[in-house]
Image (cartoon, rainbow, N blue to C red; front, side, top):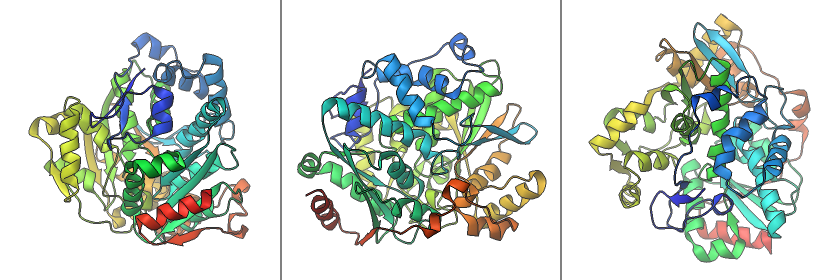
Length: 460
């Protein structure tokens, strides 16, 4: 399996190289040269299998010869051993033809654990074999950072630096990043928003001298291995509802487009997906793009669903690459235009996007109302991100089952949930002492040179 850059001017890599490299040297994102497909019979044969076996069968074609079968099975088993539900990603019915996919049973109570726990094991296996050490730098709007820290803390072959927007994540999200005592963990609170953190990360990767000096690696959703791990729960949930003999649709709360792009990959692999619905909060750049064909940044307004407070959706580039017939030069031009704040998508490309994706948005008031209504109607307590998706999903219900992705445990956003429905969601027992743990983090200015200097100092 070979991996190519969305901008067409970076070396072709194998799976291990693409995973450890993260962002391509030309600023693009790595994608498979071809998407492997599964027949209806192969998909049907996975019905009733444990999540780990489905994960092995779905991901195995993408890995190539990087890992042997038994080694890869062991990696998957270790990745999901710490989850709090035997089904890993269970389904709950909300109403007629509407199902909630619970993705919050991992160690940090968010969907990011599915990818990050796996990538931690993949990195450890690859780096141990190579005898190498890497520096992971990640940018987070809330959940990626804590999931990365949980996956990599204490590992001998990795130092992990997480950039998060100071004051713009929930207290639970912040404490999950700032309380681990392991010395290879570095939480950096940046005086800016998530897009500032993500821009700094991309600039670090673009600086080849810095990148090589610290042996930089990425675990944000720009890393293909992250997307790949998320493809699995599209298959497992669809199988539970009758796939491949029955089509399903998905609604995904998304800001960075990585989670819903994983659904697109599942569809390309042969999973019978009718519609993929993009659900955005008030920072609705993806919904506006789907409506207008213009990708235009308008600034970020802090919301009760902070993991979606994004205006630069990195993984959207991967979708654009496909609808522009994989013309790297065209994508490079669009990304260059984005530096001035916007770009226009061609009519043909927009038609192809609309054939695959639908979209919707939820205001703050609508999100609060959805949390209250769902609790009253079903007893389910939703996190704000999930509530955004449920509101949008209900506007797109059809004859096929709709699966809405529930991306975080409500206890990660207790104030917003309690204000909406009167329930103060408790943290699971294993995290009950989170607010008693000592925090350890550094507040840094939104200054690229200062960030790079700090990372070098910590590694010295």
